[in-house]
Length: 242
Ligand code: BV8
Ligand code: ZN
Image: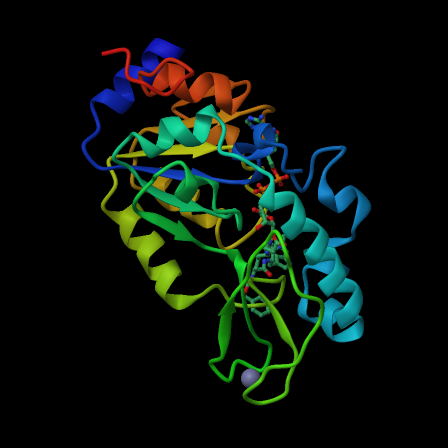
């Protein structure tokens, strides 16, 4: 299976990676839907939704403050390094910047990033955040609405620029590498289905089978930090075997 995956990837000239929380799990960042995942402790309908924030802006801001601090100490794992040294376009649902830290170039964050705040009233004001020293709930200096993490909450549209870039990447891809996602969040998950309709090879790397499994040309069940270096032709330190 690893050999088959490697051959498919070696034969591609416009491969795209599509990743979720499982890519960053071995960097110590909790996933969403695993038993010890974030949503097991915090209901996403409350903590990652507009209604949740407007009901309890301080509680949601404090939750993101905790997550920001945990992001500050996280480092890329071998899976990030392996992806970074491939010349793929990286479409990710993750709001961490571990792919950037591993030196990956073309990255599309479908659900935003955690090192930026924006005005909740969308007046246009946004600020970079030092995740090692995250601020508490505060007002927008321009229009006085609340500032909130520049991430996409349930019930919010995805940013048009990123969505269009992701669709264009999938439309031009000749292979899709899906890593560490349960494929349950839409419209992001729909990108995997679009690739499947285009009949391009889909390599899935995931710790468990998911609803995406039937779409896979090859599915490798296991840890991304072990499997990605193997199928992208590097040893775990990230240097090429070739
Ligand atoms: C929208 C950002 C239009 C913030 C997140 C009913 C049916 C279908 C859809 C809907 C529905 N009702 C509502 C919807 C739409 C909704 C949705 O999809 N809901 C689902 C859950 C039912 N979507 C939306 O609301 C989206 N917006 O549709 O806009 C609109 C406008 C107005 C009104 C209505 C609609 C916005 C969705 C974005 C939400 N934002 N997060 C934050 O992060 O704090 S969601 C969150 O889920 C993250 O972004 C995360 O990335 C994403 C997906 O989760 P995964 O990354 O896949 O993580 P998960 O834990 O699920 O899976 C991890 C996998 O890794 C597991 O399979 C595990 O086995 C594997 N793994 C673990 N360890 C490893 C590993 N694999 C390899 N190696 C390991 N070591
Ligand atoms: Zn504002």
